[in-house]
Length: 293
View 1 (cartoon, one colour):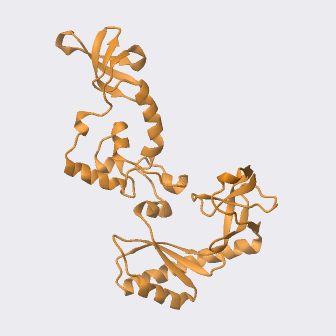
View 2 (view 1 turned 30 degrees about the vertical axis):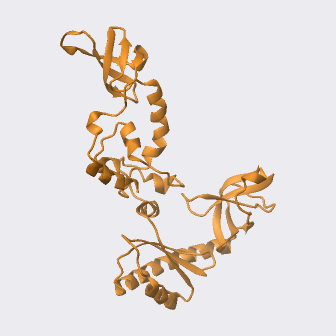
View 3 (view 1 turned 60 degrees about the horizontal axis):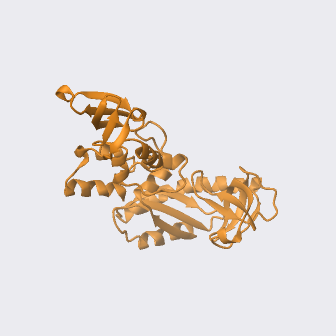
């Protein structure tokens, strides 16, 4: 067994494992840890625990110490420098006429490296920009291109539901989201209704998908043949979350449609959980597929 402790470097960032080195660490403590990039300032995100050797992916680096008042002042100083570096980088980007959008600037804890995050539609030749920035700051410079999802995570904001973006509040990793999920959840395939601030499919489709998959196992789909208290019929509409069904009864005058719950009926033949209106031509589907990228 190996003793580990979880540390994160951003509020919604990933949790990384470190060797606690016999320090009295508790969740919420600020610490200085040894990383591949040098010393970094982080926060204990999960308590000390023992895990089997085979679960360890890479060699553990150590927690160097609990953060001191001096360390915290260093971080505050870095945050002030980042604002200045952001403004300077914007000027340099304009000077070199580069088609890129600066998102964030981060100083390493020891200020030996400055990381500039940006988005762009394609590849950007920023070699001259790096030389210019290195001449100003006299330290290592790294420019890192990120995607639109990462941009939203860094910038934050409100989603269409009126709540802060999931990616900037509690999601530590991005999971693949597909058009298939939107279909199975009975959502409109209008891009403006199923995409988030980033312009890609909303992350909430992913973590709600398991619930829908379980409900689909116990709820007859559209087109299913069912036995009801009023005779056999065909399901014409499903409210998956409430379990309510509209059923066109066989042999009834004028094709009477009656309301039932899924517990009122017995499934005789399976249907499907996608409506005919969701069928799209290849061109429209190709446009929707872009939301998955």
